[in-house]
Amino acid sequence: MKIVSWNVNSIKARLDHVKRYLEENSPDVLMIQELKGLDFPAEEFETIGYHTSAVTQKAYNGVAIISKHPIEIILDKLPDDDTDEQARYIEANINGARVINIYLPNGNPTPGSKYDYKLSWMARLYSRLKTLCDNDTPFIIGGDFNVMPEDKDCHSPKDWEQDALFRTETREAFRSLINLGLTDAFRVFNNRAEQYSFWDYQAGAWQKDNGIRIDHFLLSPVMADKLTSCTINKTPRGWNKPSDHTPIEITIA
Image 1 (cartoon, one colour):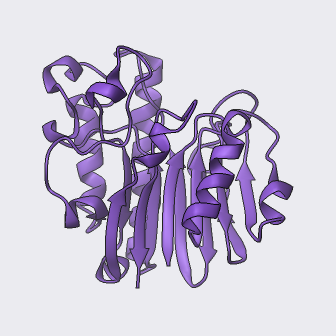
Image 2 (cartoon, rainbow, N blue to C red):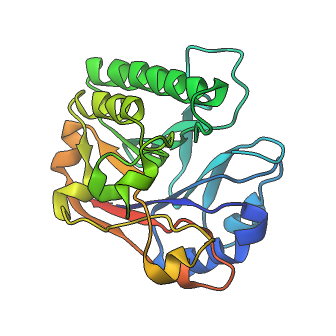
């Protein structure tokens, strides 16, 4: 089963890109983030054979699952804060697999309330994933984590030291997820530096390959045992008027 995560940076702006990607790559499941709007064009995907489920928000955030297989929604928000109305989490059973799609908060500027929210959200995510681990529920979680786990996950670590995506507290919170027994799928197959999933629109970052790796798949032990590939597909980042992110793809036996 081929499962893909992609921050599309507005489904309205990138609808044709998403449809093109589906037609050219035919994934079983495509998880997308940063929809940026209340309306989700489900019918556009249904006409080409995909089921959909989306959690949307006016102007900001938003996550969706596009799947060849029926989608059984388990949760449409991250537990432990009923006041949190941001659309950042969707969890579902698909073709026998528990699949979680997240758009983790950016957290900038630091210090401040946005960074506090990021760390709080990561603590809630830890709690949810620990529950799944404690219940022996095999799962795959993917999405835009807005975290660079290591120095080699960014072009110039010194430039990012105080950024919310790279601060010590952020990386420690990410490692706490890994320490639940999860596997960073990409690093199973590729441990090299300068492997990126995001390039800013400014300062020729794409042309210079000045990027960062912030889009990830983490797998529970049972799912990690079934992992056969994980790659970053840079092709869509080179399309006309692209998202600043590009898809990350895994294959599960």
